[in-house]
Length: 134
Image (tube, rainbow, N blue to C red):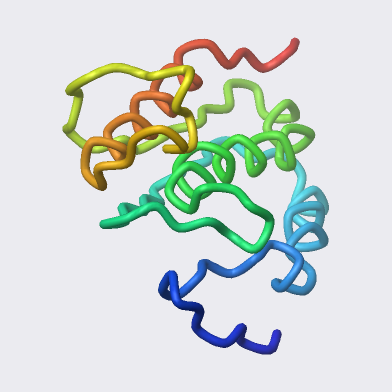
């Protein structure tokens, strides 16, 4: 088990991917099972204030947008082996506001639930545009 980082003045930090030993190996290990027909991403993080991961990425953006993208990319070989693979990204029922491309990580403005909405809208946009080659 990876050592825990001490709490900072900014509050607890989400675990850093490099602090989770074997996460890349776990994803690549899925290939040994052959085709993957369905991948469901159902994670979501909302924060009351802007918190950065150890890598300097805003925590909600990292969990709600980057993590599903990286998981899809990591499992792409197994997904493309299935005849009609599907990726389901759960975004919740909040569809308010828009995606502020100049504030993707809450650098300019951060209001917890509004920023959560933006990250889930970004995930929906990615869901509609992401095409598996083949």
